[in-house]
Image (cartoon, rainbow, N blue to C red; front, top):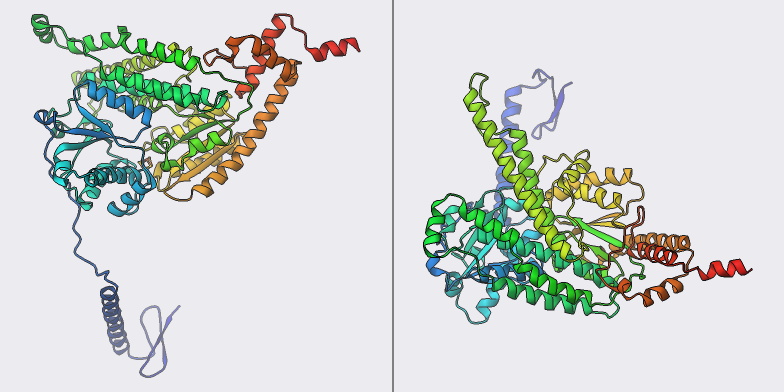
Length: 609
Ligand code: SF4
């Protein structure tokens, strides 16, 4: 087929054949059309430049952001410099502060980010970031601005504070956090403010370490203790709060307990051999590690305070016959952890709406990282990046690779076991009321058919696996997934969740995209799903109560006469297929009543008739 060209000067239409034969002289037509096109382009460009100038949006030469050379944080500065950190819950942060102070640092947590932080993050950072970036980056800027507003000069802030945070190399935007902090600090006038990055997979960057913040075993064990104890106290409070008889009592006790634990962590003195013995021990390689690990395993230093804390929680009177739908919270790490504007204040909202929350411990994330590291080593079988696979005749090389691979796997397995044991040691002090950590192997098995477990970034396959795990094990009535606006991994798993929910028909799953605005819309969507979950919980409770043959009044009367049943650490056995606390509770109380030969009044009435 040919095409037509309009000749403006002659006013005629000229037809061209596909091979360029035209009814009019081709050269003249093309020259004219080319110059016309060039004229149009020139006019367009001129007009564009005029408009850009008029509106003040002229294109400027692009200056790529380069990581500034920062002063290092040195040991000699420790006395004057305060280490800032944040991004978790206030409970975890308070304990981390205690650990850092116990290790001799000045430390301060940055409060939970608010919407103002989000706006500052947008103002001073790049466009197109994910929601947690805006909140956390803006939060640091807000904190520094507040220090300035209190009368501390910019230079003093830059000299006397450093920020410590985690970093990674991606693949999601987590890899951009470091650059984002630095860019926002520069744009907000705090150029030169120091950001210390702890690489998620590679430890603290050596160049930045400079012993100002020593990443030794004491530091790591301290942080892990703070995280684990923070997780467990958080879990205990979330399990007691919905059933408390006197409103607000759990929070009051939690505050007291966090203060106690903070003081304990702050006063911790780390064990060292003295004088000559210390010198001798240091000559034996690995002694430091062994001493620390043995101390961690054998010492009851934290357990003593935990026992006191347990007593305080145990004194809270609860009523487990209140029917509450259990809402499991999953999603992206930060969105599911933060307790503020960053996730629309979803936790207090759900509590006010009558739900019992099943929150996610940070420990799951730590175990996930260890598990993924093991997977990577299994896949590579000791072959390092960029290295060639040894030939069959390179026996020694093959052997060395295999040995390295096995060694690394052993170390990671030990780390998993030690971590799990330490977590369970604290759980045990609370009579195992806090939830046990989900097995990562099981999570992988559940999630992998839907979401390849080798795809990393964010929570990877965990978002999918948790959904299936908690529903299948009768641990919740609904799953709420909090996923930040602009989050790449969460968007991927959102797509997959529809396949999951189509296979598990009874699943109540609601994904909520968190942002700096839109609270009302998000709350109303959650309210609708929660309505369904409430109905599910009520139907389940009624069914269980009917099965017992007792009336609720009879069960309550029995509970009133058996004080231990109203104590938080009295463990109610979990009946298969029954989710709710109240439903499991009436089944258990009824079983005890039957064993004691208490006849249901209804039944007696039936017998008399
Ligand atoms: S997981 Fe999502 S929200 Fe979190 S850092 Fe990565 S892209 Fe951002």
